[in-house]
Figure (cartoon, rainbow, N blue to C red):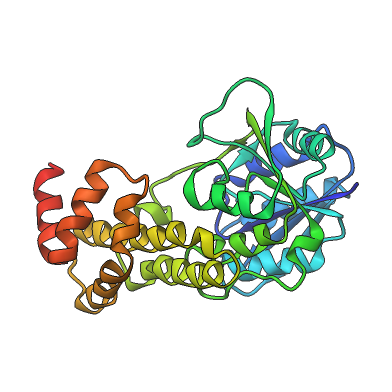
Amino acid sequence: MKVSIIIPFYNSESYLDRCIGSAIRQTYDDIEIILVNDGSADDSEEICRSYAVKDKRIRLINRENGGVSLARNDGLDAAGGELISFIDSDDYVDDDYIEYLIGLMEQSGSDLVCCKHEDSKAGEDGMRTLVTTEECLKVYLTSNEIFASVWGKLYRRELFEGIRFPEGRRFEDNYVLYKVIDRCNSIAVGNLRKYHYTLHHGSFVNEPFSTRQMDIVDAMNLQRGFIEQKYPSLLPYANSLVVYAANRCLVKMADSGICDKECIDMIRPIYRKYGKDFLKGTSGRKAKLFFRVARISPVLAMRLYRLFRK
C-alpha cells in the first residue's frame, strides 16, 4: 500500500535537511513525500525544491501563509496514498519508521498505529492492540499511550474523510484526533521509539502566554461535548481534561507574569462544573493541590505557583 508522508513547513531551513533526509531514507519503498510550504520567507522553499528535483517521490506545494492546519489540509487533499503519516518539519524519523508502522498495521489489522517518541516510555519490541472504539478513546483520554499529536502515527486515509484541521487555531491536533479515533475499530501501539521530535527555543511550548493558548480549553470543551453525546461512560475523563487544560493556561500565565482577567473568568466555571471529576482522576498531587487553590482563587494559585517554583 502506498503511504503519503505529509511534511508542512514554515521557515524551517535549519531542520529540513534532517527531516527530509529521514523521509527519503525510508526502507519501505512505496511512499510519496508531500512538502507543503506555508509561505516561508527563508530558504526553506529552495531547499525543498532541490530535493524534489532529485527525487520523483517528492511533491512540493506552495501556499500563502495560513498556519500549519491549512498546510496539513493541503497535504491531505493532495495525498494519493491509501495510508497517511505526518512528520513535523523540525522532527525526524528512523529509517524504518514507515516499515515498522506498516508491520504493526499488518499484524493487528488496525486502522491506526503509532510508535513511541521521546516523551513516551519505550520497551522491548512488541505492541498492544486496543480492540474497541471505546477502549481506544479511553486510552487516548487517560494516558500518553496514544499521545495527542498527529505525528508518530500511520492512518488509513479514509479516517480523514470529511475531517480537516481547524483554521487559525493552536493545539490543532486536539481538535481532530478524537474524531479520527472515533472512526477506528482498533488501534495498535508499538513499543519502539521511531519518531524524534525537537523542542527548540522558538517552539510554541516556550512562548509566553497569549489568549490563543486558550484554544486548548476550547478544544477540550468540544471534545467533552462529543464524548458526552457518543460515549457517556467516558465523560468523567473528558471533564477532567477540560480542568487540566484550564490549569495549564493558568500555569502558563504565571510563568509569563500575566494575569488576564477575561481568560480567568472563562476558567472559573470550568472548575465549578468539572472539578470533582478532576480530583477523582489520575493527575498528580501537585496538580490537584494547584486546582484546589485555583478553584477558590485563580490569582492566588498563580502567585503561590510563582513563589514555590523558585
